[in-house]
Image (cartoon, rainbow, N blue to C red; front, side):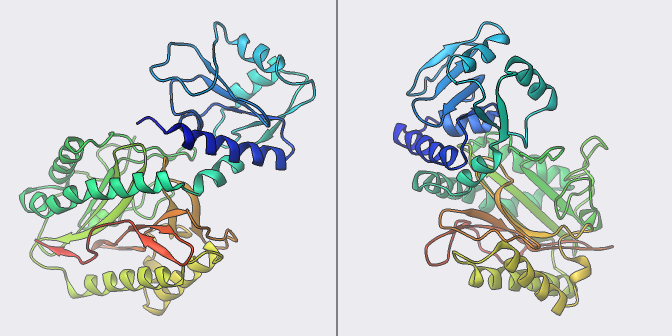
Length: 387
């Protein structure tokens, strides 16, 4: 999807203000999603953004879409250093994405530019991306509208599936027909996610190597996540965690299903998750810290006697995460976080429990922070679905 020129210009203007405030002379953007955010294309090799003046797109190929500023074709890897040196004084401070830039690439760049200094620009990028523009919010609302068809079809898919893999396959086919891009981006090192995670029966309570509340076993030890081929049985929870992503921006939602009935104890667990969600939504507004919202959620889990099962086997210390171009955008509603909510932030709130021997229970919805509270983006009813 082509970004409107005025959207790109506003992003560049805000980023350059941040560079100036942090006394950075320029930034070099290398990570693909950040390239898209600031240029509207992922075909660039890199994007040079001075603290003042027009950026320069650097490429090794013809571009299907040209940004509204100059581009330059690189012929060798050494050209990048030469281009930067021709545009900055010696000793200039250049911002890089330290959170994602491989060490070998950093060392190669530092060798090409020995007369320059480098600093971490990733917090500036992530803080800016955390505050969605009006255009981005409308893209997320459109994602929600397209997601609704997937969620409305899920009860029929659950009823016709023999195993969690059958259900996952049906969901994937439907989502792709809706135009799902097929990949959900995750920024953090060694973290990865598929766009749907089916957690059925006792196997759904299994933890994994990822910093997520629930993982499932998956079909291979190389990717222990989601459906694993277990049968769907009456009276066992089926948790469907689905990330809709049609135009680059992801909307993360989770719902609870069951065949025939949901045991009373698991319904009580679900009711606790729902109560946590509603309390956090009521408390969340600009100026409230993410840590305070986590503490509120954990306190309610403790009052219900379920703290030992809260947020999965690892008890990951957060109850929500930002969503946008990546599934782990800022902010993170994490324990001890002093980050304050601001209008334009969008996050997925996911109070979840892993009950040993029974399965995974919880829900997840996305919300946008407004001047007075939260706007719910998720269009699906919260109630468990008994098929």
